[in-house]
Length: 90
Image (cartoon, rainbow, N blue to C red; front, side):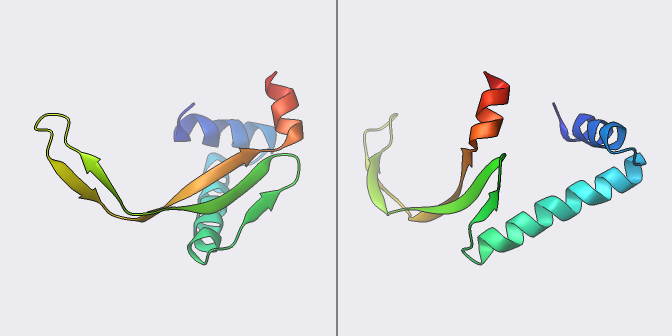
């Protein structure tokens, strides 16, 4: 499912126009991104939780040359599915 298909599904299930569904989805993703940027955890009961993880800097190896390279530390987004979502997928 891509973003357009998701907007269509939201509009249909919530009896909204596609424009309103797109605004709702944009607001949802913007709010989650803003909370994660602050380092906060976002928990949606029954669906799952989003949080920020950290990877430490490390040494890696270029597979073509074998040369050792430095890989910078970075943050990444984690998602853990909730129990209800997991049951629906099974």
